[in-house]
Image (cartoon, rainbow, N blue to C red):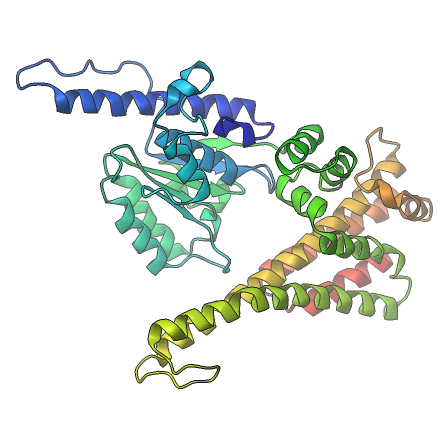
Length: 413
């Protein structure tokens, strides 16, 4: 299976990346031939025309469009050592050592950076820049995939800018962000920009069946419910708890008939998000803490004394875990708000007589009830209230206050 098979519904982008990977392979081959040539022999012929390969790329697109998947596929194609095995000789066969190790995250020359924190700071970015200045161990390309480029702080962005302005000869930066506005203008102006679109629902269902072995009916339902968001569709199709959480969220519009119902519904959304953060902490934090204690030489057993001078390292880990918990809670809450927006989108579709398939077909009765007892104008105001709540959370408004304000606005319409 070629690495491009996982880039769903992005034919134009895939074609562009495949052409760049083919040219990148030609650059490597020409450089190796030049290195092997005897002194006095002619150099490799100079390339003409516009170059399809460049040192910095920016992948943008809505959530779930597959930005990071496309970036990883391109990284694998750049490291492919057996392009003849792919259809038409395009690098990215998916079987060779270069492709396989890149996709599983163990290739020595590919650094895939994703964060579970709220931001990426200067220190982490400087480490990446130092890594990017190294020559590739495998002789092909040093590739840095930054999946959350929109989370760079201003200082981190300035550090990255210097590396993008003056790249090492064989270094390629692959940056991913929801939109070009999420990246500093000075950085995006030095990147080749590729815009991905939301994949068609049928294409998402197909990849769930083909790659994850999901039953056709369940795959179609998950793809339709998430409106083409690949990652959320996979989670919804494979995680019973995710389906239960979504079902609870879709009942909320029928529970905000009075102020008491509004406040209770808001508290339940916050509690559910907190439970997600707690579960992540239970799965990850304990393991991280024990591994660090062992590395620092702490006394055996829970609560064993740490060696002198190591308390700072433990405090740094605890701060990181606290920031990750905040991010997890915020992401879980945002996911619930996205599902709620989808519900009112279906309500609006019925009110306007639009000939589109409902995303939430399983709760059609509830959607019809809200549609019949309201107006399109009130539905739009409710959608605006959800968007305003998401904006308030981005500005670090207290989550409970933001959600309570939203549920009150949903009641008022």
